Image 1 (tube, rainbow, N blue to C red):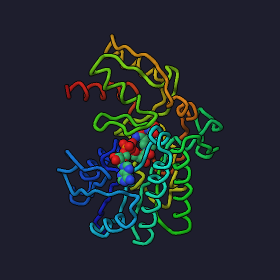
Image 2: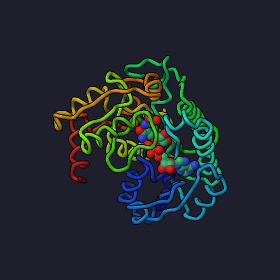
Image 3: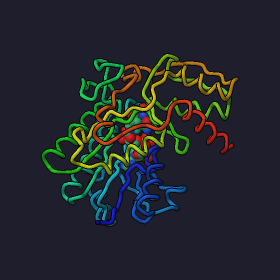
Length: 316
Ligand code: NAD
Ligand code: AKB
C-alpha cells in the first residue's frame, strides 16, 4: 500500500489543529504536513513538518504538493460566517479560489482522497428547520453559506466529471477546548465555557432561545477521518453529508454549565450574528451519513459540558 502523505491546510485553525494531531498519531508525524497562511507555532510546529501556505496562491499549492509528495488532503483553510459577512470578497476568494486550487491540484497531480468541509451554513430560512433533510432547499443568506453551497456543487462536479475522490460533511458548530474558533456564528458555544471558568459571567451574542446543531471536537475528528477512510463505493452523497450530534439552545447550555458552576451569570445581547443564526437549522437528519459510512456520535451535551469544564479548569 502507498504510504499516505497528508496535507492539512488551515492547520492553525480550530479543527485543523486537533485534526493534524490525530492524523500524525495515526499515520506518523513525518507524513502529515501542517500548513496555514499564518506562522505555525506550538505543538503543531514541534511535532512534524510545517509550512506557510496561502491556498489562494495556486502556484504555491502545486509546489508544496510536489515538495512533500502529498497524496491526501484535508482542506481546512476557510473564512467563517461572521468574518465572511464583514469581508465578503475575502470569504469568496479564500473559500472558492482556495478550494478550486486544491481540486485542480487533485486532478492534475492525480491525488487520492481530498476532504473539503461544508457546513450547516448551506441551509437558509426556506429550509425545514427541524430534522433538516439531506436533500432539501439550499438558499443561504450569508456569503459564507453561498461559498459552501458552491463548494458542494463544484466538489460534485469534480467527482462526477473529473474523477477526483472528494468527500465532505456539513459540520454543525464545533465545540472544543484546544484552539479558539476563528470567526463563526456558533463561537458563543465555545466562548461561554472559557468565560464561565475565567470570569463566572458571559454576555452571549445570540438570544437565549436560539437553537443550533453542535458537535464536540472528538466526534468531529472521528467523523472527518472515518469519512476519509470509508469505502468509496458506498458513498452516494460523498461531498455533502448532513452530520448531527447535539442540538440545544443557548439557554440549555447555560443551564448545563450551571450544574457545575451554580453562580454562572449569563446575559443575552444579540448582535449581527443573530441574523445569521436565525437562518440556520435547529436540528439535522443525518441518516445518510449513518447508513453510508456508519456515522454515530459519542458525545451528548452532559458529557461535552463536563469534559470542556474539566479541561479548561485543569489549565487554570
Ligand atoms: P478556523 O477559522 O478556526 O481556521 C481556518 C484556518 O484557515 C485559520 O487558521 C486561518 O489562518 C486559515 N486561513 C485563512 N485564510 C487562509 C488562506 N488564504 N490560506 C491558508 N490558510 C488560510 O476554521 P475551522 O473552524 O477550523 O474550520 C475548518 C473548516 O471546517 C472550514 O472549511 C469551515 O468552514 C468548516 N466548518 C467549521 C465549523 C466550526 O464550527 N468550526 C463548522 C462548520 C464548518
Ligand atoms: C460558523 O459559525 O461560521 C461555523 C459554521 C457552523 O460553519 N461554525
